[in-house]
Length: 129
Image 1 (cartoon, rainbow, N blue to C red):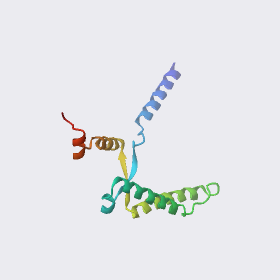
Image 2 (tube, rainbow, N blue to C red; image 1 turned 120 degrees about the vertical axis):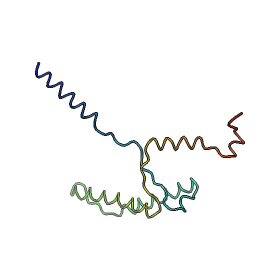
Image 3 (cartoon, rainbow, N blue to C red; image 1 turned 45 degrees about the vertical axis):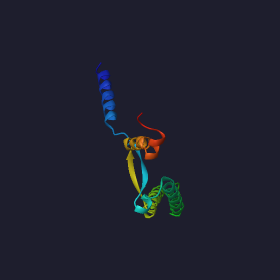
Image 4 (tube, rainbow, N blue to C red; image 1 turned 45 degrees about the horizontal axis):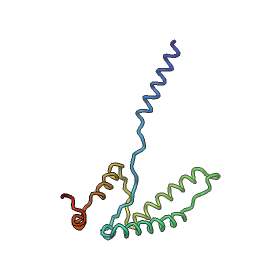
């Protein structure tokens, strides 16, 4: 009887500890423009600039030396960190900043895009009859 009580207490303790752990943050990182010149671009131009800058930085990032994982585990991990840091710095030099957007902010942005009416839209689709 005493063993069963101890097992039940251990199970409740494990369940309680796992419930208190923080879950991974919900959202994603996105690159946003820093310079005014990039902010003034249209969505399509901005997307093409972002894609080309990302590809250039990825290609340049591959030049950072990373030793073999089988030979040097710590060196491989340090090399991967250097590559990530190089990519972030390269993107910042190209005019893009990495920011975290929560899932709520992304959802708000999508609903705002759907609701965004311009004067021409009111003429074509009147909101009120």
